[in-house]
Image (tube, rainbow, N blue to C red; front, side, top):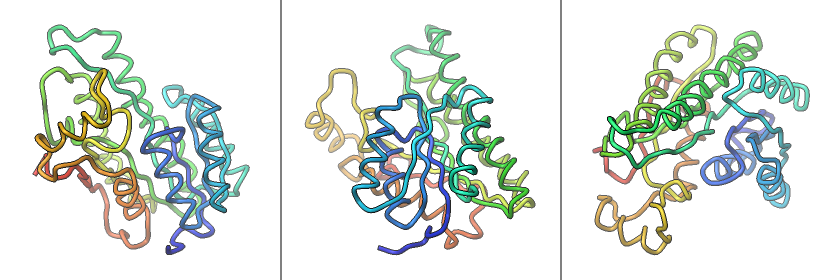
Amino acid sequence: MSARFTGRTVLVTGAGSGLGRAVALAFAAEGGKVVVSGRTAATLDGTVALIEAAGGTAVAVTADVSRAEDTRELVRRTVETFGGLDVAVNNAGIFRGGALAADFPLDDWQALLDTNVTGVLNSLQAEVAHMRSHGGGAIVNISSNLGPHVRIPGLVGYQVSKAAVSALTRAAARDHIADGVRINAVSPGAAESTMSLLPGETEAEREVRMKEQNPLGRISAASEVAAAVLYLASDEAGSAVGADLVIDGGVAA
């Protein structure tokens, strides 16, 4: 294992489980000092325990990204704890579906926009505010193949929210590259997380479904998505600005 992030501070939102936890573990394994954030202290503590058991360094900070004051406090505590902020991964998100556009519940629509879109903007604004006055940094937003690249019926709210994340990423990347802040996105498809399970579906049933629906014949491993995130955050991707890296086994190809 390399140590691309030794001496760097990394903030990961939505890090209590799933892809966020995998990303946090991957940064810690490569030497990063990781702040894991989310709304549930118990799951964040679980991520910290896994990182520390593997010899890494991490702390947990609870925050709700839909609240701008929370994201500002999150960045403040990150800097206070580790002395700076070099990399941020805006992964926190929710999923709502099950209705066509004309019937989509407005409460679900608003919840998706509040967390998936405004939450990314709140996080990004707090992160850039620090980075642009402290030598720059790298930000990776977690979008999705659904919305920016693929559309399927019944997921209009989620797809619109993730299309907005993709557009926000590109716009912010152009706005802030002159500040030394590189902003990119990773757009996973069905991956190793509960979000890729249909209601009532088991992991074994998902495996069968993916053999039919995914050109690769399987879901993406969480480690594969994490590897894409780490690449975009690393110096190796120094000229990647406004990129949207799709990791979905060929569904959007």
